[in-house]
Image 1 (tube, rainbow, N blue to C red):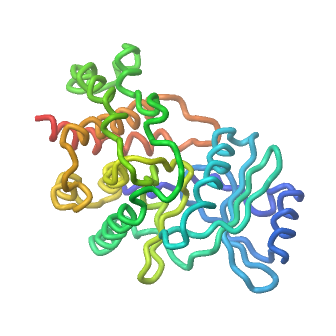
Image 2 (spheres, rainbow, N blue to C red):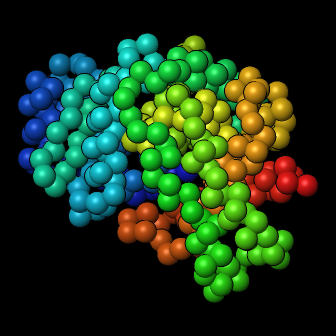
Length: 312
């Protein structure tokens, strides 16, 4: 089965508090007459295409702290990124944000498009890959003053956490369990490996991509930071394989984004990503996100297989 990344737990428009709905309608200057929920992603919040009484069509998302404090923080951080992206960047424009103390709400221009079809089709992947190359070019140097991805050196610490927790490490396969210390050492170098001056999306996968006619747009930017231009491709490839796409080693061998990347830096960051996914997949479900751990596990397997191939 190809996992589509649908969490299946979105709020409907009618389930939002009246104060939130009214604040959106007042800000937009027109009543919402229809809201079509968009199921992709894992947030338990609201995400829908809106049709207004004046005929305009927009996209809105909202979440409250009672559902997920982390998700509220992510929504608010996305304001800091999306609101400052140059108009030339392949991303929807942020039109409004608000929500008060307990809620975070954002409204974007609507994109008449769809996520890539799954399993991945080669023509769709070729389009997305070409767009990734352009995105890295357009965002180098970063047009937004954001911290480097490595500003939080503990962002990737999965292998080190597993090395320190024998009970959790016991769930690993024999090769992985025998190499935990080696993988932890590789992971520890990820801040230096990720260094660069490109604005990186930080969370690319099929449900954060829209194909709209000839355009490819990238949505959901709360995890953005500054780093090496090849990071988004590397971080995305495990999900591409999981969803029926091409072999990551072959993509990496032929991609302009990988050209010139230090192999040791690639190994370090790939180890960091694989450890993050695998360690996360062994933890309890976070509140409101019942499918996240399974999704992480299904990406961890191809990430680790690719890493093992590189470490031979």
